[in-house]
Length: 342
Ligand code: CUA
Image 1: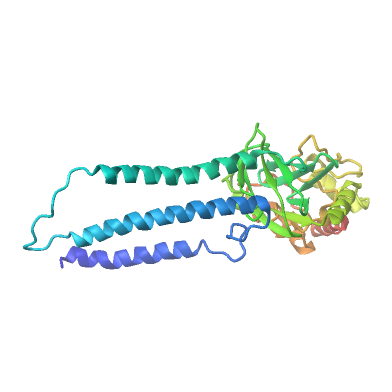
Image 2: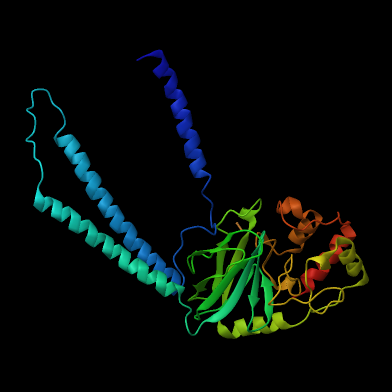
């Protein structure tokens, strides 16, 4: 062995170890992207098609590679072995290996194209919602019920929900893995997909298109509820703010300039949310009723909200919330008020 080769060995081993560590760093428990069982008919149709295409491709791979490895081994060079018989052309074999892949491709293409068209149709009994992507949060509108919320998409269980998607800034991608496929969300265009959940529950999602510094912090969740509970939620969201701010809260609102970007239905100085116009920041009218804040990255607790208000840029780099440093009294007043807005 030459000296050069001997030196290359440990370097290779190190490179292998680093590559393995990088691979492991992609693992996370309960990440929104985890492969999970589909939880609705639309996700299930995509999952079935994926499995059919995947196992067909895997079969072809093992057949072709197996034959290749077999031929390499069987006909390898050995001293004294005569040259194998040389064959040129075999019409029957050639017809077979033209027809078989064509049939296989048709068996993949036909269900794929049919499903693409079927998923693109708006189901006639669908409930319609609109999702507007922002760097880095999701505005969710219910035009039929005049409700606007953020980062949490409430839907009724067992009913298809037709989601129209658009963006106010860059390209994002809407993805709730257990309920539907992935769809790009583009400025100046409307794309759509259909969600449907079979069981009540919370289904995690994530922006799936790199959109800036806090792309990884642009999450969302779908809360699927039995129809009566969903109606109760809608009624609650339609109501104006549950409480009026105290003088201390109003002063903090003014110093931080909250009304410039947020809406707060029924509170003086703030606009009301509208299903037709977007605001820079999420509507706050029922902030306390949400499970999360900051693009569904933080649990909605007084501690997390206080940390967020102290330094939004540290919690979520690159977001649009640029405010003066608040005093602890201001933070306390704002946290108490916002959390009371159920
Ligand atoms: Cu929005 Cu990535």
